[in-house]
Amino acid sequence: MQNQSRPTSLTASRIKRILELQPKLLQRTKKDAKRYLDVPHLPDLGRDETLIDVVAPQMTKYFADWNEDPTEFFRDRDRMLMIFHAIKAGGVHILIERYSQLAKGELLRSAISNMQEKGFGNPAGVEQMLPQAIQNAEIQVRQLQSINPEEEEAVKSCMKEIEKSLSRRSRK
Image 1 (cartoon, rainbow, N blue to C red):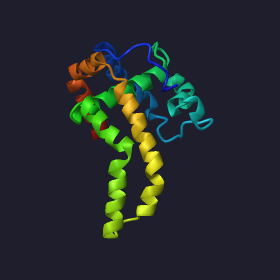
Image 2: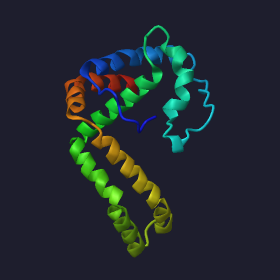
Image 3: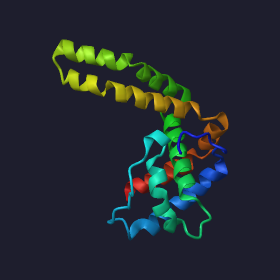
Image 4: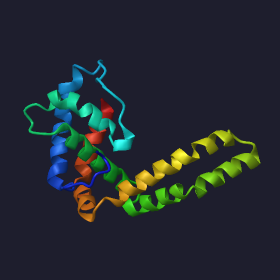
């Protein structure tokens, strides 16, 4: 599950493997693109189950011949992208600081107060979303704090390849 400790960290070679398989995976899944992926049940959040855990068994057929576990592939790809976007946003530590502020709720409470003063938007609706927003920010902080310096360096060393991969996908 997602919150379990990671036995290995991302390396430059793992990142390059993910980037190598991504276009191949897109080719293999293209013919099924208009079909929905079978989601047998919703993730059990009480067991830290993620959507990746639920759909990975159905993805196994696309990974045939690659000696690759779909769950690990998608987790590693998501982690690579999280680190990549954190670096692009100014660095992992900057994002930890920003999300920590959100996790305290002060920023959102200030926005609610401002909305009430100016009669803007729906402060009551935002107030209802506050606990979930705080929880999401706390999760993001934990994920960002779990990034080790070696992973950050590995992603930095592959920035051009990751950007190229992302720009190729956006053109399609």
